[in-house]
Image (cartoon, rainbow, N blue to C red; front, side):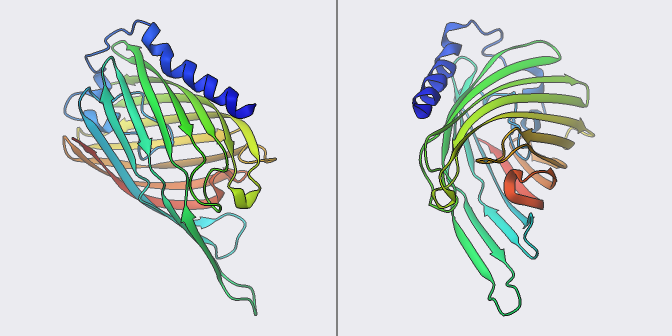
Length: 278
């Protein structure tokens, strides 16, 4: 029953844009175009997705690697890559997105007389659609629907069907940008963790500062009302920079920290990545 509700909600969200006239459906919003447009277009390195959609007929490739410390596990380390995201521009101010499985490697130092332990495997895959409903000179509003089928391995994958619905509102004025994403999710833990299903309310706030046409700094705070099955609130923060090597190529650096709970399973992490517009 829960999986059926997820499918119905995703179907409604995915097809709703076709029934609603969108202002400026073809011309990109100001934050999504211009010499530094790629900085506003990319989803990474923030957890929050961009309010911009990929221009029709174009493709965005985003990838990165992270290394961090596991929360509550002295000496525990976590590594993930390639954190790949592929996005394709569709007609009418929409885009298609696919997140293939990423590889995760965890290591834990052994206690006296106990050998160190390692686990590794692949996470789930996610597909979705994003639609821009309109914008003004400073504001833009967007929505997206994402689906995660049962995928990945038993240690890091998704035991059952998951889904997410997100609304994104952004404001830009000169070098300053503020974006808020509010979403709801229904997902399952990996099979090895019991495969329990949980629902969550997920707020996410990002502030950006474009110091030059090539360099942008950001700060983010985000949370989930349930960070896992029978787990309560979890929240994290991260910040970093993006550098535009060329109008079609970006590199970035980020640092994330745990605030409360066990959202993401880490105490802190460092990440590097890139974005390409083709």
